[in-house]
Image 1: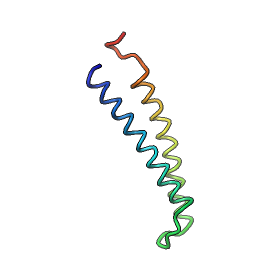
Image 2 (image 1 turned 45 degrees about the vertical axis):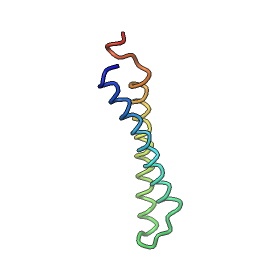
Image 3 (image 1 turned 135 degrees about the vertical axis):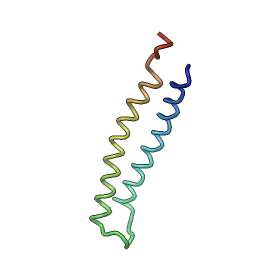
Length: 77
C-alpha cells in the first residue's frame, strides 16, 4: 500500500466524522434550538442548509470510501 492510498483512506474516515457533524448541527438548528438570538425562519434555513450539505457530503464520502478501500490500486493489479 502506498502512502497516497493511505492518505485517501484517512481522508475518507475524517469525512465520515464531518458528515455526522453537519447532520448534528442541522438537526440542532431545525429541531432543538430554542435560542432567542435567532428567529425561527433563520434557524430553519440554516439547519436545512446544513442537512442538505450533509446529504451531499455523505454521498461524496460513500464514493470516496468505495474508491479508497474497495477498489484495486494501480500497484495491486
